[in-house]
Amino acid sequence: MKLTMIAAPEFDLTKTLDSGQVFHWEPLDAGYAGIIGERAVYVQQRGDSLLITPGMEAAVRRYFALDHPLREICGAFPTDSAMCAARDFCRGLRIIRQPEWECLASFITSSMKQVAHIRQMSRALRARFGEVRKLKGVQLFAFPIARRLADATEQELRMCALGYRARNLLATARRVASGEADMRSWRTLPDAELRARLCELPGVGAKVANCVMLFAYERLRAFPIDVWIERVLKEKYFPRARKLTAERLRRFCEEYFGEHGGYAQQYLFHHARKTTPRRRLTVKRPSRRKLSGGAARDTIRRAAVK
Image 1: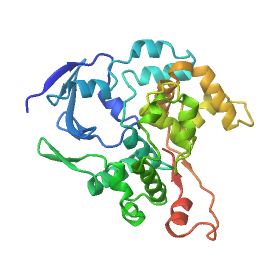
Image 2 (image 1 turned 90 degrees about the vertical axis):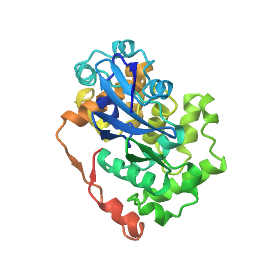
Image 3 (image 1 turned 120 degrees about the horizontal axis):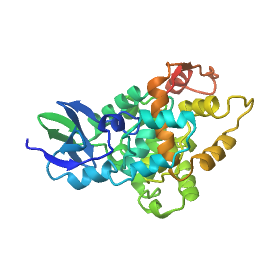
């Protein structure tokens, strides 16, 4: 296949795809194969340029946000030591613009899972319910539309290793497929209302809502706080705080990191995930009377930090 070359200054393809934003790109030859929307695409970096599948120029530029003024964004970060270290480590990492439904569904499945496990679930969902695409002799699968998952059973979704997440994904897929949750129309909502609408969906709390706001709705102030980020914030910014509430952390992040907080969060997250020794969290054992079957078994496992 003859590839097309496009300019991609201040961009690191590998760091961007490995930063926990998306979960379906696969190494292929000297680059990566994946799906943008419904189309298969091959992307390979060569210096400050990308070699890509012909006809996908506009889609690739938009998907990888090559129009974001990355130097200006990074220049606006706070200059504390933690942020500077993350900025230098993550140079070239960009926030990907994802389809709303694909992003929402992916992060509903991400609860208490490592990135590698989320990739496995995404691959299983795509292979079982998505439409096949072929690229360079390799089979790829588009992410299943909401209607396809809405017509599935919870047991079928559990067969993709979703555990208790299957119930939430199914319920949300049905709301999206029916139009009750019109995700496209939500693009015009202010941040607070968009976050509230997202949090009404099964399986969506503040962290998932902020991920979807950042990666699907391009709300670059959104600052998802998971266990990695909470640990970074406590260790680097509140080392002597005895009690630190979620609300205090939220307000601090909004005020301190400002307009491009989403980029700051992604850099802090990726830097911590790649440079911090792995530690595990112990989840309290729930009462068997309150959780049944797979939900109980899934909850009592020792949950790996994402």
